[in-house]
Image (cartoon, rainbow, N blue to C red):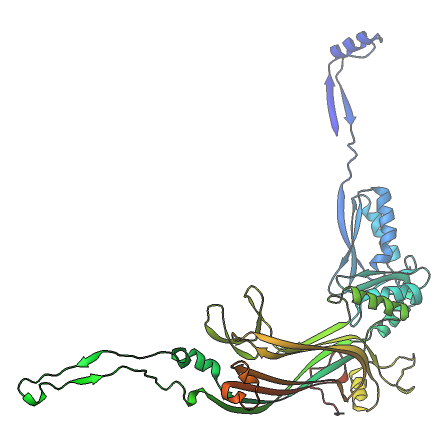
Length: 500
């Protein structure tokens, strides 16, 4: 900033006399120039495209230089889809030539003449990012910190993107990346198919007199009497003297109509059988526990939270049978099976089979020829399919629980009474074979008598005074399972197993 002041000789003399200085100056006009600096730095931004060095390697050097010049200076790394590296520097206009000199001196090829080789290696540390395909990034973080990485390496995890970052010496970082890619293999997976077979045989016999229907029908008028007394009909024929004194008399008495017919005779026999077959498949991974302590901890969590705990696999088959029932208004409808609570509310309750498979452990055999140079068993589709084709070559160990439910009786409104059973156990299931897990056998023998008291208890005679209904029902439920190894890239092909 420049200020120009013009003072006359008289004013100068007045100032000099006021200050007590000798008045030796001439009366000529003088010009005084005052310069003022407001200390503002003019900033500019410049983009530098790097040819040999990486942006993260040159950032510390350039940043320290521009920060010494002005603390408001900034440097940013710029990335592009082409893969080229660049930095954006914002600093004083006068300092940009020095930044040009720094980048020119550092951005030059190194001695190794390799790709991305530069004259410097930054701090000697490299940063690597990797997104696993088959595993969780958190698993690799612990492996890097405890086993693979060097003493100066550190791993970080971004759970939202399932990405792992680690910072280590360049050679160690490259070696770690190679091991992580090798360890990033799918967990052993198995598809378990449950087969449900139901055989049902029932016989119904209905003999005797339907006393209940007769009592509510014609039996109500059993004591009805018809009696007409004192009725005299006199016909006088005045024209014919012969019939003048003739008279017709109708005497009263008891009149009974037929109160029983063949519609009240029950003679019915019904026999039938039914076969039901159903199947369901469930794919699951191996339970990832390393020792007995982790397995005990997992079991404790499953006991406390059975509905939300991990590695508890559930599957259910619920066929929708049509059921004829009556609602609270007495209207008949055809709908799903249901049960009715104390308040008269109806809830869907179809017969079903619920299966629960807990903590599967997958095992398969292999030889030294199957392993690679590092001792890893292959995890390719070809290897998995070869395991399935071989018999007696591994299987899966798991705990299971089967819950059966079937309708036993229906009330007069269609509400159902169900019979339930729970079967639990553990099994070792080989690949390519079918094994029976549970057999449930139920036999019902029901005899119901409706008739006159006392008389309905006398043998043979009870059929004359009551109705005897006999129901014999036999039900056989068989649940089997078969297993095969699956690869994450396999399609949902049907399971083909050898029955056993």
